[in-house]
Image 1 (cartoon, rainbow over the protein chains, first blue to last red):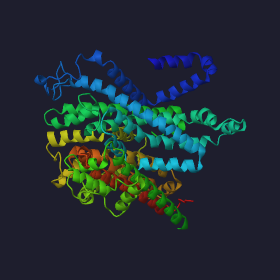
Image 2 (image 1 turned 30 degrees about the vertical axis):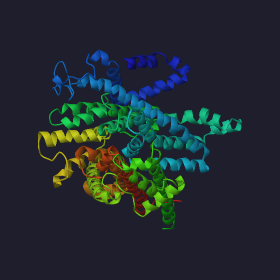
Image 3 (image 1 turned 90 degrees about the horizontal axis):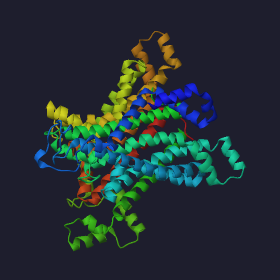
Image 4 (image 1 turned 180 degrees about the horizontal axis):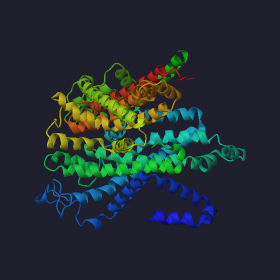
Length: 303
Length: 309
């Protein structure tokens, strides 16, 4: 267990930790995180999910896309632990392989959200004035499409398919990063070390990227974790409506959408893919709450 | 009230600007599509004359800015165009659907407020008790639950297994029970969390200690003194949740075949009825912006301690 190793490092070799302030910070954060028992459960859940998806070929010998109408809609059994779907495909294999896609969609969408949202938020907060106003109005406009509606409208515009789903979900994650980073930058801008950097004659971009942004990262990391859950939820929602990844590729939301037609005959087709989405989102939410606690105890929300 | 009036004016202007921005995006939705927008709007079965008529109707031969001006002018007058699927005006198609969606959203908001405030208050009066932990756990479950999956699970249990409630449609009054519960789940969790935090703060105030000291019954202390004061931030969250419920309605309506705007939106995306898609997205966003504005203004009116500069 990594936790016990880390514990022994902190317990037995304080000089090492003292010499490396970064390591000490990390260990302190880990200690705080570990105390948050629910968050550890979240991390364990995520690690288990990722490992299961990555080692899918070892866990099942079934091909997730191999159809066989002779064995369609079978209930769970030894050879098919979760049963088979309407085309006789093994449900467990489809969930394991589909998880890879759902997780990748989540990561790439949040990457887009970060890549667009963080610089815009930083410029907005640091520059102020008219630039700030324009960027904030832009964020307001994106936020005026309630929740799921922004991603849905974008997919309606761009068309279905993996790439468009990632872009649409990614763009809907942008405004929350803009708001968050702007807020942090506004307070960091007033710190003495930023004033010092100004006094030393450093350029604006050096100040933003070397001094301001690194110090604004803690809430961004927390938000990214929570956004991962949100992105998986939204992408699966699009898939559920039939506007996401197209068949026969396995993806959790698309599977759920296909399975709902057989809800009377084979409820397992809707139960298990949905359970997978729920566990992944729950994992990211629990982990995010714990991270918030570990990175910045002042930001605590959960009792 | 002078400060409030100025704040009102500022918020009003900001809302109008946001709405204009939304209208630009919705306007561009059809224009950025590859190919001839007139052909797209006319649909696959349209004749060449239809396409030409729509092209003139949309003013596609004019500059983009002029086109947007015409689009905006029609929107302001309540003209959202003609549906490609039914050839009826979008607005008249939308009206009954909007009523259904509002009915669903209001029912959900009611459930969410009632359950959320009750659970949050109970948890705050017994902090760190078993009930409190149970509530934190269920709120975490509530915010992580895919609304479409929850809906399907409720159908399996209450419609398929127990046969208590209808699985889909809106034929009987009981039809609204499952969709509104499904849609409410996320908001219940959020409102309960917020109420707990707000109530914990209120219960720690001096006036609560005074109320207890003068021998008031605990229920009276909690409800009349603490809850009354804790309600302001809670009302805000409930209001903002109403907007979020509109977004969640799209998925919930699809699960239950509830004949609202969300279901119509998904159908219209599939049938490439772009005038309808534009109209629905505009109505959803306008409603959302309006609710947020009203909540903000109510907040300023309810709480005399808040000053805006």
